[in-house]
Image (cartoon, rainbow, N blue to C red; front, side, top):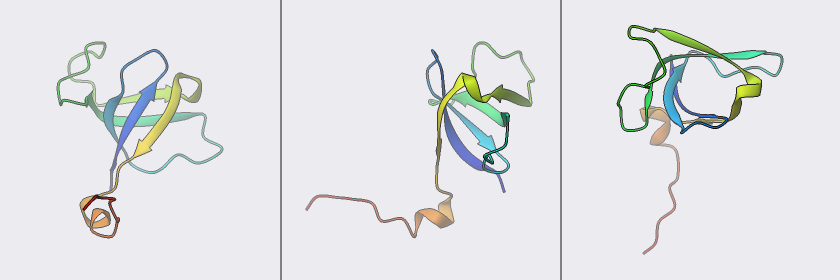
Length: 81
């Protein structure tokens, strides 16, 4: 099952994408699909019809792995009363 991530690239605005599996320590790159801006608009530097993009680790600052809908029910959010 694909997981949604926020991909922080060096010198770029963060983008949303999906990954099939979480990266392993020995991986040299990260393959993402369905890449888009955080507001859902297409990323301007990708050609039309691109299905997947492979980024080497030196271009990635960090990844935020978002919980799925079923995982979200078990995550405790902080709130003020």
